[in-house]
Structure formats: structure tokens, C-alpha cells
Image (cartoon, rainbow, N blue to C red; front, side):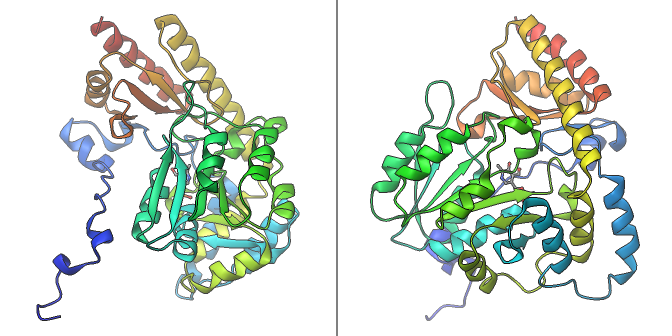
Length: 373
Ligand SMILES: Cc1ncc(COP(=O)(O)O)c(C=O)c1O
């Protein structure tokens, strides 16, 4: 190679990746609109609106002064807590710096140029990014007309060589729609066992308990299944970055080989170990979320707006003049997620906030929608 090494000489499949736009930081938006940062209503990232569990705050505070020591690279305490909670062996669990990292490790282990990765239309952007980072081809399977995942079409796509990884999300982001246990079981029966299926359950805890998939039973049955979970949503730890991969021991052992030794930091491990045992926090989160969803749906019904029946802490709604409505919201310090980048310019995704945040959102939203008519 004659020239100096520069960005221009990066691998072509890396240079081809579109940069991710994380949006402006809350502080910058607050300054732009002359609003105090604490008055910004953040309804764009599906975080837990009620904050961190106190049990996790206490655990972090207690461990803070141990910050000079590396964390436990094997996350022993966290795995013990997860194992107790989920009833699976500790060597079926891998910790990640957010579940994002686990998705990336899966792609690193199973995707390369010449291999293909399948996911649905309207699914989490990191699936595509992780596949492209490894030079794999991606196949995006269209959803059904009602926005649900077309599992038959996804299984058919997976039957085509050389698919090696397939991502499904339950419930899905950004649609909020859920699959049933029977849907997922029938799907796993159809997908060839040489395909690694990733079942991303980032929003699982928001579903009514009797509708949650028994994914641990599925893990026992399917060696080609990896389940991902996160502490960023219902558990309220998004800023600490901690998530999990769950799979049979051989798969976890493989992923551990390519994981950075200290990938999950000490504070995150302590917080997650406390949060996973905090039933009361999870119950309160789910209850407030259900009330919030009901309020939003009632107003959307009143306005005659189409929305999807969510099982998560966000809701997708079709809004005439969505871009202008989002701008009006922003001027009042309310941030929602437009879905233009998904090819859905008339839709927005709204995270369920605290009751007072929902009140503020609805006040501005109703006026902005009326102004479009
Ligand atoms: C479907 C889905 N999976 C995974 C993630 C990643 O979460 P984290 O990396 O914070 O665990 C998100 C975050 O928005 C998500 O929506």
C-alpha cells in the first residue's frame, strides 16, 4: 500500500455505512429554545420516565468508591442474580455494555462478507449496522399491511443460503406490536437450524405478564437461539449501559471469546444486580406505563388518529403534517421521534412519559394537530 493510511482507505463496507445521527443533546436544544434543560420533555428514546430504581441508586452509591478497581470481567454477581431470576445456568448468560454490544458481538461471530443477515422492515437500526460492519449482505423482509412482522416470509428468507443470522424483536420497536408464544414457536420450527435466531426482548417487561413469551423454555429447546435483554428500558438504567445475551453455554462461550475483558462497568453491574430483584419498581413502571398508554390512546381516538396497539412504553401514531407537529412540540421543549428515516414520514413514535409530561405533551400536541386541519 503506497499511500499513507487515511480514512479513505478504510474497508469499503465500513466507508459505505451511513453515519448515525443521534440528534442534538438535550442541553443544546434547551439553549436553542430558551428552556431550562430540566423542563425538556424527552419522549424520543423509550427510557423509563420515572427514573432509576432507588435500589440501583443505593447499589451504585455504595460501589462508587471502588471505581479505581476494574470491574469483575465475568460479572459474577450479576450473573448469579440473573440466573436466580430467570432459572437458567450462569454459563448461559453474557453481559454487555448495553444489549447493543451483544447484538454487535453476535454479528461479529456469525457474519462476514458472503453471508446474509435477515431482519424485518421497521426494526431496530442496530441490526443493519452490525451486519454491515462485518461486510454481510442484509435482507429486509416487508411487514404485513397491519405492520406486524411477517414471520412466514422471514422464515422463507432464512431458508435461502447463505443466511446465518436472523433478528426478530418482541415486542417490536418502533411499532410496539407483539408476537404470541405460538407465533414464535411455529417460526422457530420453520427456520433452518443452521441459522442463528436472535430474539430481542428489549421491551419485554412492559407486556402483561401472561402475554410474555417463555423464552427461557425456548432457549432450552433451540441451540440456535439467542435472547437479548436490556436494563435500559423498564429497569431504568439506560445511562449506565448494561444488557444481556442469553443462550446455551456453547454460544455464550463463543461470544465471551470476542468480548472485551471489562466491557460492563462496575457501576452498571451493581445497579443491574439490584434492579433485577426490584419487583416493586418493575410493577410500578408497568402500571404507570399502562395508564400513560391509555391516556394517549384516548386522545388519539378523540382526534381520529390512527395508532398501533402498543405492548411497550412507546406508541406509533399517524399524524397529518407530522414534521410540523414535531417542530411545534420541539419549540415547547418536547422531543418525540419522527419516523421519516423508516420511510414513514406521516408517523411519529412517542415514548410514554410521567403523568405530568403526558399532560404537557397532549396540550401542545392537540393544538398542533388542530393547526394542521
Ligand atoms: C429493540 C431494541 N433493541 C435493543 C436496544 C438497545 O438497547 P441497549 O443497548 O440500551 O440495551 C434498543 C434501544 O433502543 C431497542 O429499541
